[in-house]
Image (cartoon, rainbow over all chains, first blue to last red; front, side, top):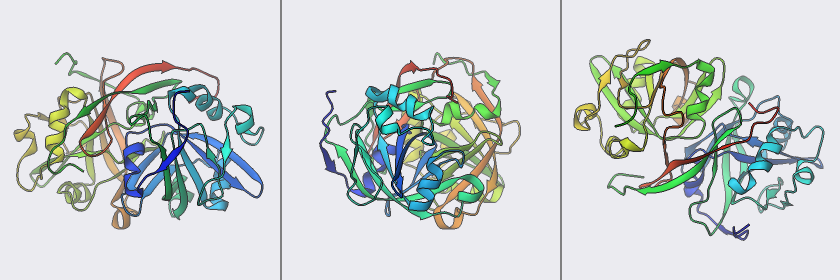
Length: 183
Length: 183
């Protein structure tokens, strides 16, 4: 893989540059000696500062209890190089296997939370649970990103965007339209 | 524009095929003779059935009051052909101008809500407000999509995905990884 696996710090208000375009992500979690990984596509940036991200983690997922109890997770950003791992993680259950081992992904310690980061990913967003009031009704968790690290290059990673039914869209060309008033 | 502007109905549980990949969208609204349009990138699919979408519409946006009072909106999906309109809509205020007129966009009646659809867009998701409990704290609206219409072609429209600071990523190549267990 050509990607540089060393990561640099990202100001937290810039997390949106990676998550707003809607990539599929890998969510890692840990609780009482157990760890898990899930593929997730239903998420949105909610605020710049504090850096908030909302997402659906279904109670049908093994990760649901791990993130609810630990109140932490890491949102890891894979690129197209990891498409088969993304599919594998998304079609198996952590109740049956250790997904890191099964799919050859490397769990490394995060800096500020107990959940591990996935070394092979382009970026890691370490999260603490900020609001649970929609968890019961919608499985919707609101996270505060408390630490963000990204690969220095490429500047525009080829992220994966899920369209359902096994169809992914890869990030394409970059278009610039700088204007006053754009944030 | 090569795009077919005639639209066909989409089963509501398939809305995610268009919104899950994270495209920038145009939200149209109407209330008491006033109409408006805003550019929006902070949204997520929340459920298949009912078809739920959550999004941030800041109270700083002129559209906030229109959608809050009318309890309706249309989420319109633009493609790269509309990038300059997307930027124009996103950097002006409906308090000052009629954005449809200013940017040459056509407001047409929706089928089930009072807010207009933007004819030039690839798809229209007509929404009714489903849950407001996070509006006050986060400006987060939960919508139920009650009608969805999409252009029959292209099957994979070149959507726009925003990375901040005037930088857009266009939808790229399509990758298929059909597997048992994928939804």
